Length: 115
Image (cartoon, rainbow, N blue to C red; front, top):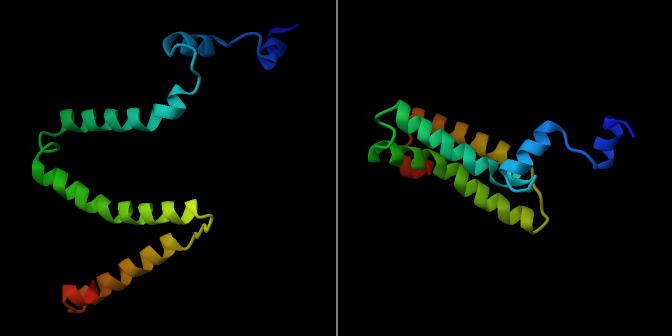
């Protein structure tokens, strides 16, 4: 059996697969399972090192404020998907509402009216 056929049959690993198995204890799905969390931690540490303002309370509150809208929509979409009622128009509606709200604020409407 040729090495290519052995790789297809699962009898032999490529050098990369062997290295990954030794590093992660035989689990091939570690990066698939923890990849997003690892990427988030790496970005957090990188931003903390590169900018002295990243870990200030004001900046963290600003980031949380900006993420809150997407988080609220994501929680709502999670419930929609769990009940098998997948609706792809949510992103379009969110964009439309943002444009209409910005237009109303620009034209002088008060914030409570827009909200």
